[in-house]
Length: 181
Image (cartoon, rainbow, N blue to C red; front, side, top):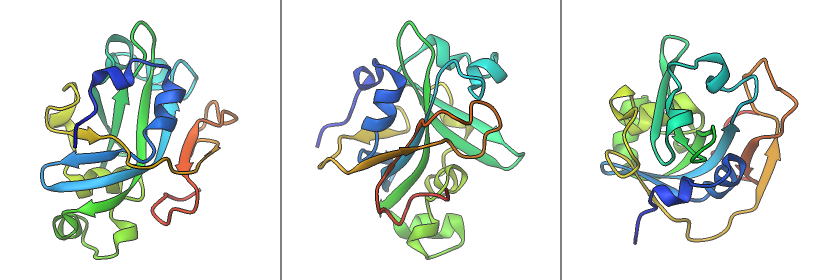
């Protein structure tokens, strides 16, 4: 099966965030189907506003991996979007598909619902850290296209204090792998 390339991300951030639902993350021997994302552009909660220097990738690239460290303990995976604009999509949760034993050891749980249900859990399960930051898609992490179109719903983003009214969280309806909220 072919992999997605940077052209997939050369669109508006909200469109990319929705279209990532159902695609498959491939990191080494591990695979997980994305079930939840959040979009960030120039809104007050965006790193383009709150962490300008750290998040320069959001303004200069599309189809690149942007990883950041939060709360002194968790990594979060994003993909940059919008050539000529500002944007990134946070991957919030995924359904584990392959390499579950490896993910379970990394996470310390065998419950598949707790392996990738949240941005920190997802990065821990897939061994995603700052080594991937700034790499183009395909170098260390790949994405396969979705096989079917899941039913996608929207809501407000989770865990932010600014721009809370924006319904820029996208998730697969009825998926037991979606994070809280």
